[in-house]
Image (cartoon, rainbow, N blue to C red):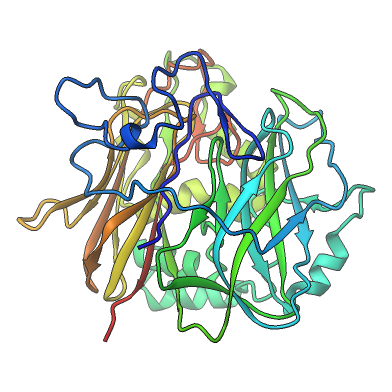
Length: 425
């Protein structure tokens, strides 16, 4: 089975030849794939930061080479806006396909690893082209500003539709929030692919793919951290393609967010330690749809502000349970936090005799994270409970302020994602 399990090395640089430049703090050669993937949980071995523990099911350790059938790049080098600490920019990549294709693998190659925080690749369909034309290049540079997503959901849910969902579910409760989030364009989705520092190529599990139709465009959202650098970037995307005559199964995904509410390390009356200040800042940066997400997540996860206010700032714990919607084979998982993360855990049917760890990272490292594919898929059934748990230390960065969910490097997240395929009949 061809699967990709990519590593992220602290403060490393990914060259176009997929060779890592090793950070001084790393003690194991990064290209020694025979040893690195198996280190977690071995007797006598210290647990490397960012590594899954031995509680995690067996993960794929092979590194198959990507066959590059198509390479796309930003039209012109983009210079991130130095006035923004976090500059989110969306760019259009036109594959110019003459026939429908399947994407079976991809690789995002940042042009400037010093300031590219992450990138997300999505597909744009013809009903979104008019919106793209209105946004693209209007400020004199290629692309457009896109905090909180590309902003291309042509079928965006109306207020009346959202209200109908709330009424149907008897109020703005967990069920209503889940349905609104999913039907309003999966605003937490990870698209068809992503890049985080140190990622190499990703090949989808054998027999699976992402369809790419003739005439469709690709949109890549790049997050630039300008606190580090605002030098030009010209990110590239490599695709491995197969014709539609192959019988390949499209992959599906499910996002698993949890509430983020991190009290100040030292309580005081300053505006920075006020939750409302953090909340208003999110709306200002990301707009009302993403900015109000902290409140939605509290409701969806059954949490209150009091649940977080009583926790010590150096160990803030948040968890959220979701119900899996169908019978499927779980192929891979992702967990994501930012720089204040301490540990994170993904579980199947917790608090039951059938409980199973899906991914356990006991020593989180923002600079060493990735997408994890199982050696053998895990069977999921409709009604299974999936729990994500995150722990943060809000004293790590030395910046005493209240923190809520946000996409910026100085914000925080608790986000998981499941990648699965339908159960064969």
